[in-house]
View 1 (cartoon, rainbow, N blue to C red):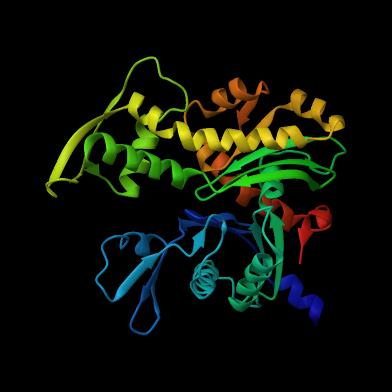
View 2 (spheres, one colour; view 1 turned 90 degrees about the horizontal axis):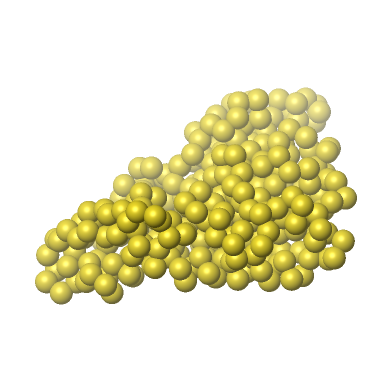
Length: 338
């Protein structure tokens, strides 16, 4: 009977990102991608909205409703809300149609045992029959097509919304890694701070992210680009529009990008000599949403002397890797934890 239950259980992978969460169902592929935001009633603690509906409420809620992000820097910041969010995702993808599902969730390489148990607990409490964990750099590497099981060094730089992780992988495991709690969100914050300091303009995180995507570049651009930005004047409190240039955005982003590169260099200094030549030959694979920042691959190549390239569908490498690992549990057994 147990064997039958296993065969009819859906196998589901979840990438709980600080900014966005993605869900993969074996046999169907990526079926859901929504912001990692939950709206909760402060009166009775009930979850009112999850994902896109909750994101619309950010910064717009009355006093009795709180819209928040339950993941911070890649780990669970609010256990109960994360559990409710995971249950919502599982229901939305029809996980409970026959039997409770098998669920795999990725965690940062540097999580503590307590944080690891929190993710496993939240996954089981949300309705999973079995829960598996895979470290984020391993999932990112698998999703990018890196042969992680070989006795050869591969370097992955995974940069999401809350944290950036650089890891050297060989024989299905992480040889050495470093992480820094600087990624897309901190870059957006740096842009917002610059706008306030330089233009006395208060802008929200959504506007800052839009500036980064439209005119942001990690390297100086040949032709300066401009973008009209609307915000609140920090002195008068009234709405105001300002033109921000790509040169200004480049200046604003220098500090957070420098921290990511500093972390990457630290990992490279710790690579065993036998694996260093492999990494120089193969280069650095960049994954995650922040990897798509214009010119970031060229900046890393310039700063480290090692070729860096952005993986295909970089923002989805982690969830694709979780899906591949779920479909081949026997192959990736060494890389998966229960």
